Length: 344
Image 1 (tube, rainbow, N blue to C red):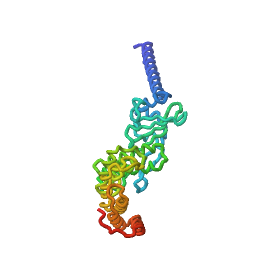
Image 2 (cartoon, helix red, strand yellow; image 1 turned 180 degrees about the horizontal axis):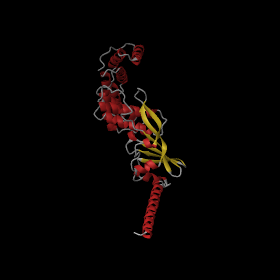
Image 3 (cartoon, rainbow, N blue to C red; image 1 turned 120 degrees about the vertical axis):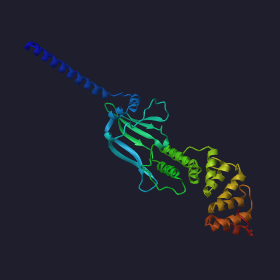
Image 4 (cartoon, rainbow, N blue to C red; image 1 turned 135 degrees about the horizontal axis):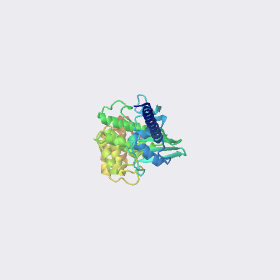
């Protein structure tokens, strides 16, 4: 090859290399730029794209994200929010699952101010709510996330002896949610009480008396949605097998169902009286005194002062101060104190 041709060939190769490098640089820059393009400043459109891809979530998260988790409060059966500043590189993406549409009632978007929006995701149920806060800079970015789940890793109370391992965890998780709800300082208070009810019902699904009583009591408290009459009765029946308070609650349900005010006459006095007598049979001092009051006044079926006195005496022996007062009242009001017969 002569010198002229050699120089021309060298020039051609250099030109091709230059063009290739220029193209590669331009392509890389274009790719990098496209990756940083804001999906949309219209938040619903942005969040649909954000939730769909883990890579998008990584790119549109602040370098440091505030992360809230629920952790056990010391050695107690309570939990409390624990907030940490976490480098986004340490987050496990995806932090949010894909959202197809905002018509899903379990996805709520709350505008805090012009530059802050909060998304509440209830798709995992009340025991697994997650929230995401976004700030608007040049685009929307994830600034904080909250997990309102109580996980076995962060909550390890001692197992309750009268429950299986799963029942015990569900029951104690329900109690922990209730404590959070009763604090009345969280935006999700209603959901926390519902989570408590959900867990009590799961713990009671095999008829555990204590869990059944707790679920029924939470229904009556008004803090969680009321259970249907049939469900309430079945819970109290389960509790009444071993717990005096369960029998007392069952007696009330037979009379008034879900009406906490107890308006009107007792609907099922025979069953109600049998249930309240059961509470006394299970060893309740208060139950024995209540039976005595019912027998004395004839509130349900039986109207028998001699049986009432026997019940008061039994309750007094068990340490009930009201029963002692009732006996003293009868001594003062009765010219001739009837002889006690039997309570049950």
